[in-house]
Length: 243
Image 1 (spheres, helix red, strand yellow):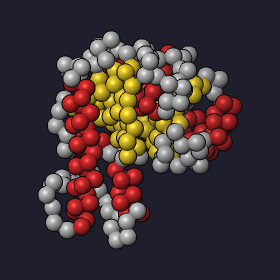
Image 2 (cartoon, one colour):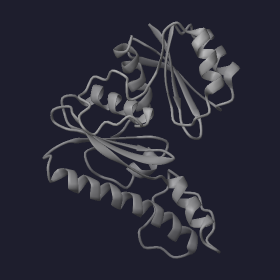
Image 3 (spheres, rainbow, N blue to C red):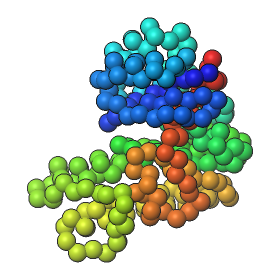
Image 4 (cartoon, rainbow, N blue to C red):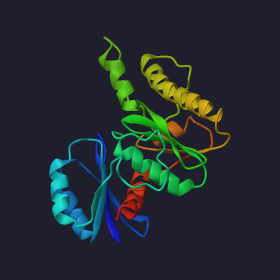
């Protein structure tokens, strides 16, 4: 089955065509590019669609997709998933987090895994040795931290944090101090969460995804690997589970 997979985030919408569990093409759209998304799906001969949305900006698109596809699944906490939901699962859980959990489960099972999705917000979710969801955390991403430091102070500039740059943790100058401080805060968060999990779980894998995954993985040396399209991979599996 050729499937249209849509990951609608806060800042952009990632679209992919997948068949037999493999992503064949990938595009990025604005949320209001409804005609372009539908045209992409038609040209790629998509037969079904699975999507997750955290933006709240896709009402028009969703209505069009319902007309275009007989088989369409909108991910929610009610979706059938291949792992044990456990007590940590809740009804308002973000659909992107659910898809990332599914994608990570498929990749690393039967190993326990910590999923870190570094986007506009950073989410942390954990599947234990029994493939049971134990819960997670939500924190500020790079963009939110840099904007907050600029907005809520009188003189601090709005800095960029380039993904290809390694920032020292002792710096001179306001710009580099902000860049390094933002990254150091997140890396410290990573370290603390990992250390606490290791008190109960001896060994687990770490999967990092999201737009800032490359930047942050440069500073975090553990049993870590980056999967750029983890949410999209999870969407394909969710489509199969909820067919």
